[in-house]
Image (spheres, rainbow, N blue to C red):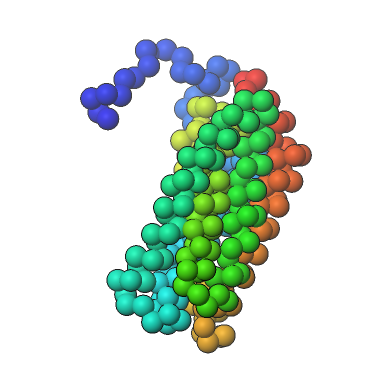
Length: 234
């Protein structure tokens, strides 16, 4: 990267017209939390990371306790099926998003919302199926549709935030998302201790994604094009 990356010529950087001074440390947070679409992708990212962190932390234990798998088997099966499916999903989602967003920018967040809602549909079944192959199918379906949100995170954020603040805004979103997501292992552990198993946690994770997905659809319809137009007029 050090060899290949080239700096732009000295002078005014893209997206700096009309802005004096350097961005401050809180400018990214201010922009994200005062721009409805950027705030929604941040909240969606919080729910996204919360569910994924909870899944990665506890599903290996779930496979060991409920299906008698060894630690190595549980570690492999908890990740393999979802990430293979996510590999395919992210390629499809990225292609569709770029194609549809060329005509209507808000389609990026529509795809995100649809991905969360469809991914949420697989989560409740993870705690109830008794067949390993059906469980792996749920892992794969969840992984495939999670990629629809994943593929558009930064594209959505950068659509509605000034170019000169892209790094600051993404930092604000990432910090907020991982701060929330870091609580997932503890929250799911509390639920496990109170119910005696991890089965009850999967519907809760599904509800989180469902709410985030519906909120994405609402914000995309109400605010996305307005925020996009406002940002790209600068």
